[in-house]
Every structure is written in structure tokens, then in C-alpha cells.
Image (cartoon, rainbow over all chains, first blue to last red; front, side, top):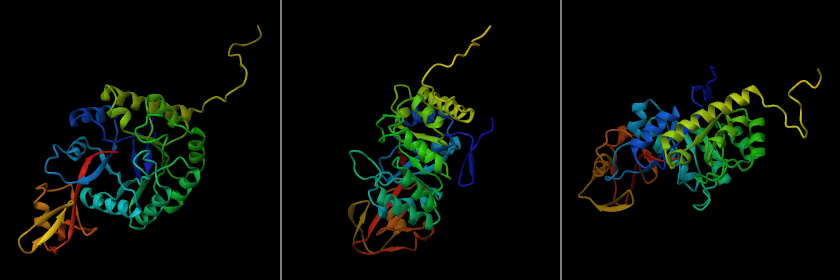
Length: 252
Length: 66
């Protein structure tokens, strides 16, 4: 079934966006990315270290996976804008996963700094994909700012707690005119399926695959879950009922 | 002259270009970006960008994350 994901005029046949953090080795990461079938994958920007071994960038290039730099580790709009500009220069992409976090313990987005950074980056010509709280109002404001997608969290980064507020995700999906990408909190395949069933356009995950006992196998599970959830969303679930509805004819 | 490269103070002899400062850290031909005092300098301008005493240089690259 031809059902591409469309972000800022670019199409992707996979609706599973991967992160690269947490993998025990580049080799394990490589196999997991292949099993996930992802076409868009995040990297972080850090100071060059002479000790850094191997390049995640080479791996993504070889696999033909589009790179999505993030601004992980930034606490202010000014920091995030600077890192995004450095990423654009280093990686020759104006796409950025915008992350502005409030504190190390929760890694929750700082909504005030996030919105300010989004405004500046959109004005500077970036395609901005913001990691945001599951707040429908903030999601709307980010879209109005000109973000190419909104990426609400299911639960805190790396927590594996799944989607804590499905109702809010539904509200965001209902009113969004840009793709809604469930970002953060996925613990296992059913969480990814639920995100897609709620109408999200894609899922972004890392920890649940890279730190699984078998990352390659979990990546395959996620690929199937995202597809299954998408198909179920398109097919339309039956309404929930308080009482039974006989599936066999009552008469005869 | 003293410049700070990726948070580390370094003594360098005489005027130094941004290209030379980056070369102290990496020989990677691509995937690297640099900023001087917070402002990104395009790669094409590294050679002609002269560092001044006390300048802070940041050299970043992509790593696993997110």
C-alpha cells in the first residue's frame, strides 16, 4: 500500500524515525537501523574529540538514510539556535530536530525557550521538527510559528513509560495541519502501534531499540508495529461499547 | 597568544587561522562545523579567518544521539 509520510515536501516510505543514541556499538546500530527500515535518523552534535572512534555519519551515508541533527543538551533558545546552525554547516541540511530541555532529571522540554528557538530557526530558513510536551496548545503555537511537524512526547526520554496521555495526543492530531510525530517514551512495540492508531504520522524512538536485549529484533518489531498501527488507523477501529454486540446472527 | 578551543585553553605561536585551529583537533574533511565566539564560520572562510587573543572556538561534529 502506497502511503508515504510527507514532511516539508519530502516523502518517506517508512514512518519509523530512529535515534542513534544508546547503541552498544556502531555494528549493532547498523543492523538495527537496517531492520527498522528507517529512512530518517537523528544524530547529536558534540565537540570533536580526537578519541572518537568510527563515524555514525558514515554509517548513515552508506545506508542512504537521511540525517536529522538534533539540539540535544541545549537548555536555552540561544544554545539551540547555535547548535542548529553548526549542524547545518557540518551536515549540509537545514532540517533540525529542535530540543530545548528544562532540566537533566526529566529532560522535559522548556516550552518558553522551545517556542523562541523555533521562531528564530524558522525565520532563518530551517525546517524545524520540535520535540515538545504533549500539550495541544503548545503544539498549535509551534505549528503557527511555521514548524514542519510537531513531535510530542509520549513520556520522558528514555523512560519507556509509553504514552501517558493518549487523550492529549489525540487532541494534537485532531487539530494539527502538519505531521504529528510521537517522540520519546516508547518502551515496546505496542506503544508504537498505539501512537500510530491515535493518528500520529510517524514515531521517533531510540532507547527502546538500542538498549533492548536484542536491538535488531526489537527494531524489526517496531517496524511491524508502526505499519500495523498505521493500517489500523486507516482502517478505522470499531467504537468501544459498554455491552456486548453479538457477532453471530441472533435469529435462525 | 591564547585561544580556547573546545573549552581548552591553548597557547599558540603568533597569528593562527581558524583552519589551523580546527586542524589541531581533527583532519576530518567533512561533517565538521566551527564557531568563533558563538558565530558559525562557513568552511570556505576558515582559512581567511584569523583568531585573536582570547577567542573561543567551538568545533562540532555528529555523534550518536537522539
